[in-house]
Image 1 (cartoon, helix red, strand yellow):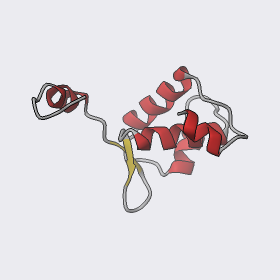
Image 2 (cartoon, rainbow, N blue to C red):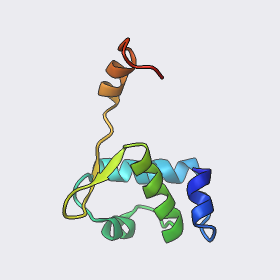
Image 3 (tube, rainbow, N blue to C red):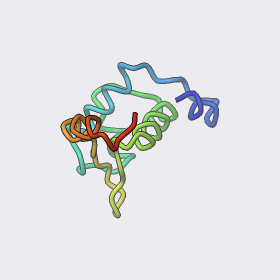
Length: 92
């Protein structure tokens, strides 16, 4: 996440609590909002630059994607990840 912060030096580093809040909101509302709408609907206010860093981070670790119309979709599947990590072909 440090790399993302360096690209946007005006933004504050998000706290873990803020990242988790945004991630949960996206999970609960997957596919319902585009990025700007999602930002406005968050349960707590977050600076736009901080929100941008969180969104970049969640996309970089493949927890979210954007559909063809720009809606934010939560794709993280912990059950699948748990199965995959135990496969002998997978090295972590």
